[in-house]
Image (cartoon, rainbow, N blue to C red; front, side, top):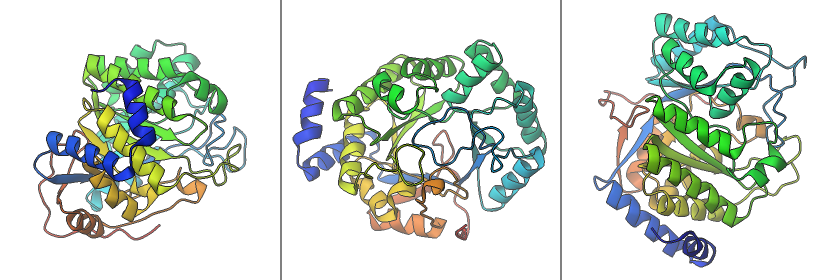
Length: 351
């Protein structure tokens, strides 16, 4: 692995196709079978009430806002059944930092899901875990253990943004800091849980700070091996409270960033293409810039959509895009084990 300063020079100055070719070489070495995976799941946001006040979020509502809501167990169960009918193998469940929900509500929710609507639950970001640890005066390890005992299977990388404290102080100072976010991920790995890890860029950070984020992820992965995949995407500024003036970064910046991520994170096995934010054509191109996974069908998505960025597709179209890029396609689970092929593709209507 080249020193960070050399990576920064390569990231900053290399021609786009040279950067992509190097990332593609890393992908081929790590995934020589020429297969691109994807997952069928549903993103369930259980509440939009939040006190974190992130400047980049168009989804949340403050407590007592008339547009605030929290789903019932039955509503969540109905969403799970709909996802399973469409071939869904997991739910990605996250919500706002809602100070009015008791901890037992989350534990009972997990038990309810496992009893009445059994499915893999990929849920509750490190920021949520940190919020609950403070709110309920618990140790973060105990929060994770209780969630795991109640039925939580894995933890998503939500709330990572840029893992550099200067940046977090500017855009999300009420959420878990960079050190704390990584600490909670490491605790989860120590407790036997697998997690994903993310980066949302274009929020005022420098290229060096993006690389610092990647370096910190690589260091945790070297100790634990607990990250299954890395996903990055740019800020979606429209409708956000304090960042609507920001210029949305372009496809070239995305392809450069995902490529340097593949080069820098050679100990993280999978890199996911973010077609949900970039569109299917750019998402398809990313498969030649280091990505070996086409992400999720996204039966439901609310957070990015709140910023007026909405891309939809079907399983048949996802598989066609993968094949047209020169790869075999395979449907997977959260741990990247392969789901046996089904007889017919499932089409999902645009929401």
